[in-house]
Length: 305
Image (cartoon, rainbow, N blue to C red; front, side, top):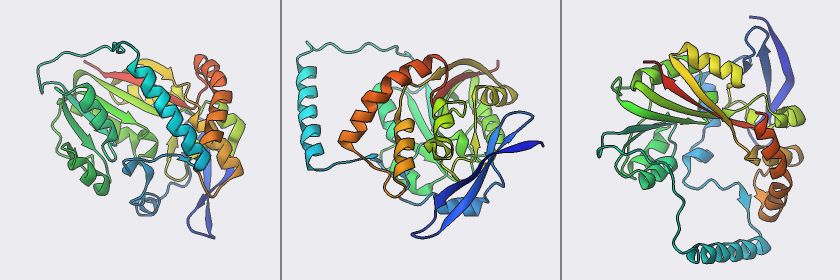
């Protein structure tokens, strides 16, 4: 396979003093971006400790000083007062009405179960399941009353043609074999079932600006990085029809990349600094989203009938 090196090296801290170099390469034939050589499964375990953010119930990227706490508390009181005076009006969302327990939903890469909790509040009649390769995370999720599995997903005993919808949020880039996993997910979906997949967009403005400091590289946890073309092709080859692609105007990746550029020791960002940068970057994010150049993309795909 022909390939070119995109970045000469990426630094990942593995201790107080040592670092390890990783090379990011791009296939000249298909455009796929990936770490080369790929880390072994055993090596990758070192980069998913028990305190890894998605395994926690509250992985807040902000740090609060005394002034920040005062502003945060004031803002919270203002927001609650505003909501209380809104005459009880609620945002109307599109609902899927099904018989209780008949709509089956899976969060693939469920972590500590925060998204499953959200779905339970929104859709109390749905049957909710999850999968994560971390048994530590799944233990937390089970205590919340969810049906979850961990271990080797390919050999898991989820029945074929069971799920109406599967969520895969920021997972595909972590997989050693995304093609095999997507094919398995396709088998688990009912005919016409939906896969919603969010992942970093390598064809983004932030990647071009920040280069090796682009936060979404997240080496070596992100083994593969996709753009619209490479991910759409992979989904089509694993039995899906891509129905829509949306680009988030969320500017968190850009802010974290800027912080990463100047501070490689503490990735939490001061509350006030965060909101100043958010206000400055948000208009840019709105424009870039129109042209598909933001850091996060979400594809909705349907299993072929």
